[in-house]
Amino acid sequence: MTAPLLASLALVLLAVLPARAQEPASHPTQAAGPRHDDAAADRVIAEVRRATARYVDIAHARTDGYVQMSGMEARHGYHFVRADAQALTTAAGLATMTLDLARPPVLVYIRDDEGGPGCAGVGAPCPTNGTWQLVGVEYVLPRAPTSGPLPLSAWGSHEASCHYRDWQEVAAARSAECPARHPASGAPLVSWHPAFAVAHVWAWYPNPDGPFARENRYLDAWGRGIASGAAGHHHARNAAEIAYSELNHRVAGSFLVVLAALAAFCVVRPRARVAAAVAAVVWIVFGAYLVVSADPEAWPLGGGRVRDVFSDTLVLQHKLLALIPVGIGIVEVARAAGHGVAIAWVVPALAIAGGIGLFFHDHEGGLHLDRTFVQHAVMGAAGVGVGGALLAMGRRRRWGASLAWAWPTLLGVTAAVLLFYTE
Image 1 (spheres, rainbow, N blue to C red):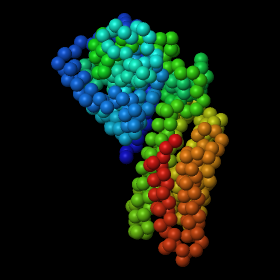
Image 2 (image 1 turned 90 degrees about the horizontal axis):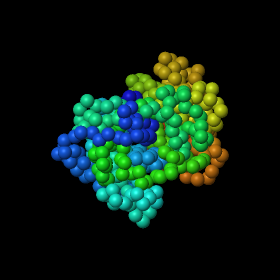
Image 3 (image 1 turned 90 degrees about the vertical axis):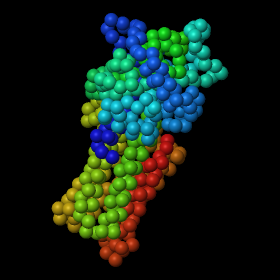
Image 4 (image 1 turned 120 degrees about the horizontal axis):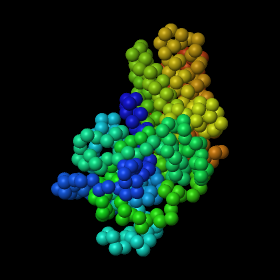
């Protein structure tokens, strides 16, 4: 997995956190219906409906990995983003400026318990019995395309924004401008994203301004009296944060799969200098990725400065743990340069330190004997075990053959935990 693709993947999860698309200055309160060829529009709608028919039942959307990413947006609805393997495809689309109608990154729903009397009489059904109703999809690209299946007039701008735990947002051109807490609600910062181009297809609900309009006036009946994005004060992480964390752990697991394979190859071929050099580079890239991605609300992706990292215990833990792979990579480079004897103890020491740190790592503050703790404890035990094995190999040469496989084996165990990590 290349670094540009990983960067695009991280941006997918940050960028599609929805906000209302900016409207042209001449029409600040009403979306203009784009002109389009009716036959072409029918083909687009038919393809979108085929691709998303199973998501009329929101349970299927959740099963397939779509998670809520916004509160009720006036004339837009609730946005659900798929935060699993499909994000890789979406990331590739972002990088190559291609649009796959069959893989919408965002589903848009409304909830019947927020519908008032006005939802009748608009030529469309109201959802009933406590259900969610799928109304459309949203596509995201770094900038508006010059061609494609959607009318060019369908594309609007999503301003750069800071997003907060209670779904509210603040416009900000740069991440450093994001307040650590929302000025009105006090909710903590979750992420920032740059400006992106967005387009809607109202495939499952009529829109008086056309199927590609940037807003849907028929949704005025939902969310009346609800501030855009407002959802009250939340202290626990929301579904979007958890989904990002889980995906980030799985990307980390993918790195470790590669590193475990390289370590195993070096056991079979002890003089494989090229494999050792590649492993060193992968360790450094892995650590750098974690430094950037572990906390999208903090430096360097989010607001604040480097010194702010030291005021948040969880963020500081993540940054310190991310430095361990970087340290291992630097040590491996030094070994390749002929300084292995003097620093032979550094890698096992880093492995043990990281393992111990995982026993005290918790996302909710304090230690909780739950599934998250068990997963971190298993990875922590693997880290301590591999560090101990490497130290033993250095002190007892005759144990080298039997302990040589400890390093790739325990890397593989940690990779497996990360690949199936859940919170």
